[in-house]
Amino acid sequence: MNFFELYELPLTFHPDAALVKSKFYELSRRYHPDRFARAGHAEKMEALTMAALNNDAHNTLQRPDAVMQYVLKLEGVLADEEKYNLPPSFLMEMMDLNDAVTEYTENPADARLRQQSVDALNEQLTTWQQEADRLTAQYDAGDHNPDLLVRIKDMYFRKKYLLRIQERMNTFAAL
Image 1 (cartoon, rainbow, N blue to C red):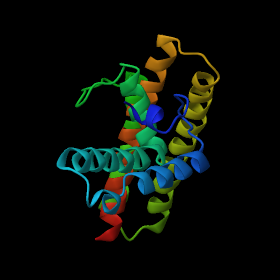
Image 2: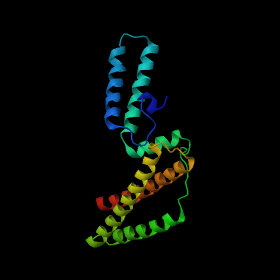
Image 3: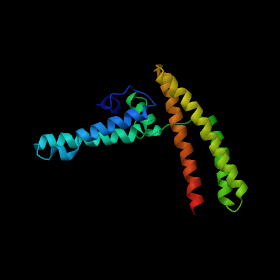
Image 4: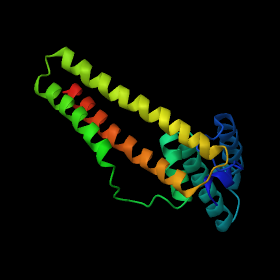
């Protein structure tokens, strides 16, 4: 059973947050270990399994990046530990961003460089969000074309790349 089936939701990149929360609480009450204190071992184990599945489902379905990863895996276009080659054009853009971040990290007292790096990253993240929203909305509207899923997968890996740059900036800023 996948998380969407567990929560009786359609397969979507944008699950209804209120329905996810409601179903989480409903299943939490149903499978709470205290309700199975006098049950047999098999029933207790099933309740624990369902409680864990419910927690995993809730943790996944409430986080957009986790939902994207989960749906792509369900659709069979994303494998665990997959090594993905991003397009050269994207990597060239990222070289410029990485250069800006490196320049900032080499000159931390220069607030202008820091702001330029932050602005460039935020611009990339905004562009990413707009494109990801467009593609995932197309999927949610019923277009489950494999080519569309491959484009969404590409967006997933682009976001991971951008988040690594952001983490690098944040780590340096914290020093």
